[in-house]
Image (cartoon, rainbow, N blue to C red):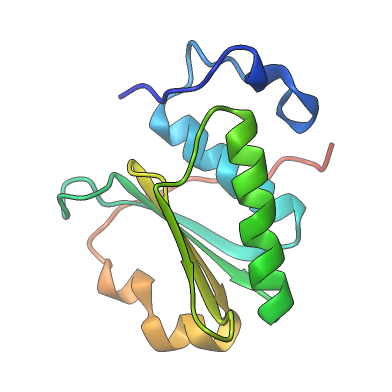
Length: 140
């Protein structure tokens, strides 16, 4: 499945080198993971859930240090994804920003504070889902 990205916006600033004509959904999810990594998110996991659920292809799960970090990661991700032509269908956060979620249809991003992530244990819930290899690139 090809991601919908605009050619003009894919060459801006931090998104140099992205080719919207060849990006798959997996490429876009890995780009989102890289954006989070560059902003100090850690323990990033990408799960392929298309065969297990009917509403998305991938789950991207990341950990943040505190409430402000959860919010900052969500804001940065939203801005960077817009630059490659992707807009979230929805974005939610817990009242105290211990967990934020952004729905990009083909993938869903969950950003948790560390202790909150352990409570919800999405990796355990989706233990049957294969993990997609993600190796962060050196910060540009």
